[in-house]
Length: 263
Image 1 (tube, rainbow, N blue to C red):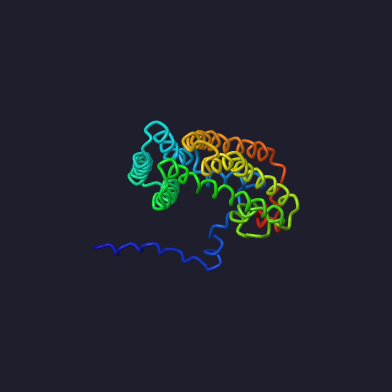
Image 2: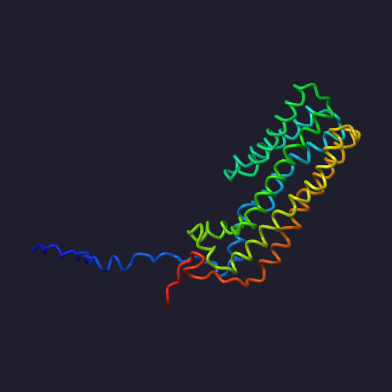
């Protein structure tokens, strides 16, 4: 005699309040101090060692090529070629191309200034001097902007804190955070101001004829390397030391970070 099929157990229906209770709670911001927040943001902005190398290599190759070969177009071609190789590697690896693109953008701006100098009848030395002008303008403008943000009481580094806490301006209500961010912003501005202070007189002397243009190009090329990443890394090292002390807590409700859930 055939046995009736056994009844299959019916899945239990979840009550609405049970489903709601099982939803994951929002994760609080992991950083306990403002220093920790800024360290993470700086590492992300610089791209680590690889990102810094990708930003510096094309410019270094241009400078070395010009100093050794004295062929402006070839020096530009070498620097652009190096940047394109780095870009291709990034694309193959399917990783961020931000820092290579930044280098290509800098070379493109420099090439435009060289082209304008050539169009106005400038010599090869004049054109090479023109290549360094955008860097001076950029560093000067960047230093002025950073200094102004500190002088008006809204240091630029503070917005790094705001970008990770979800509130762009709440950090400004904490005086400790404002003081820390002001110090860090001044440290970012210092290398830019120093580059302009050292390189601008040489560039002006070479452009005006009071200094041999070829010697000015050589000096600017060497200084661009010496005052480039080594100086930037020195400033960042000072920032890391300042940030390593972890003395400024991320205050709930003040720095834009929510309270962590109680146990």
